Image (cartoon, rainbow, N blue to C red; front, side, top):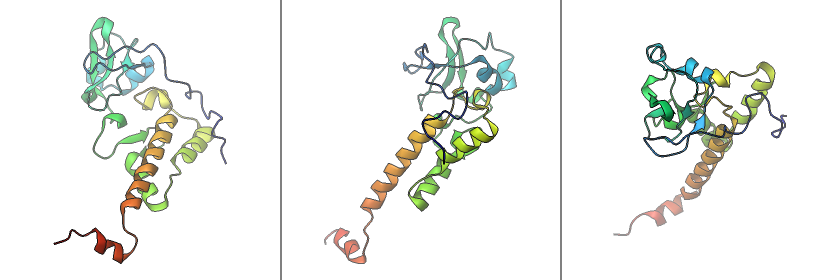
Length: 180
């Protein structure tokens, strides 16, 4: 069993401080390593970059900007990335873990079947065994584990709410029908 307090890889560090404010949605961003930008933007967009340094990531779901560098007025839209951005996706597949392929749907399905998800333990174990490539696969440039943990908790809460609203006996179905 894995120790959840022990960091499984070198990319597991707190959110990068010093991010800028996205001028499109007015929400704070987090700094992103240059290697992340270089790895994930499409080749057409990459050749037009002024620089891959100094970008912040916008995590606002409905904002089309993914990376921005306000001081040089450079913005990279969601469509300019070679991967889907899990926090900005409403349709499947919406990635959670880019290194090991976990999606929101996979977590939702597992939680619906079992009441929990093995995603965090599996990702942690695989990181320890083989390492990860978060800086070049995850649009945030950081470890996915905090996002996966939060999503698993949210999925479990949603499942519990849904299960508490579903009647457990046929007689309860009768009492839920509107009266004529």
